[in-house]
Each structure stands twice: as C-alpha cells, then as structure tokens.
Image (cartoon, rainbow, N blue to C red; front, side):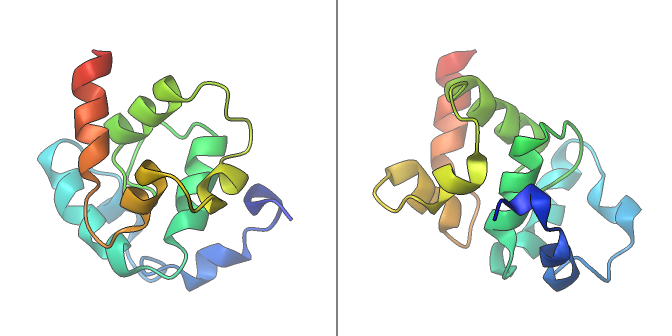
Length: 113
C-alpha cells in the first residue's frame, strides 16, 4: 500500500498534537521546528508523502522545503518515494533515516545550484 493511499500514519506523528502553524515557518525557524521530526515514528512516511505530492511549504519528514526541492531535482525519475525510501543500500537513505539533519542534502544543494 502506498503512503498517500493511507493517511492514518499522520495520527501517530510526533507533531500530531502541535499547532499546525508552528510547523509552517520560514527560514532558520524551519531548522528548529524539524528537531521534532528526528525521533518521530512515522518520519519516512511523512517525508514520502511530501515528496510524492511535491509539497512546497513547511517541514515534512524532517526536511525543509529547500531540502525537499534538492531531492526532487536530484532524483526526477523517482515516481514512488515510499518505495525509494525503503531501500537500505543507499548512503543518502541512511542519512535521511538518521535522527539528525541530513548532511548530504546540504552538499547536494551546493552542487546543483
């Protein structure tokens, strides 16, 4: 089952009880808000949903809008982010699963402009 077919994961999110406006901030505030994501039990589902729907604003799955755009530009061939994120043999995916801000994406942004 694809993540975007079943949204019940959202009720288990670490941010489920937060004010929605608190998650839709800009700039440096996004880096602070996403700290909540790093221990979230449904972080990868949230990230896959945001990438599949190309959500352009807010923090989703621990990534800022700029970080998600960098992923989408780097991997335009990915049609199902849920499946892509389930792979375990990729350095980037391991970095995304870490309970901290991914370092690789910052390097990707600097190389893609």
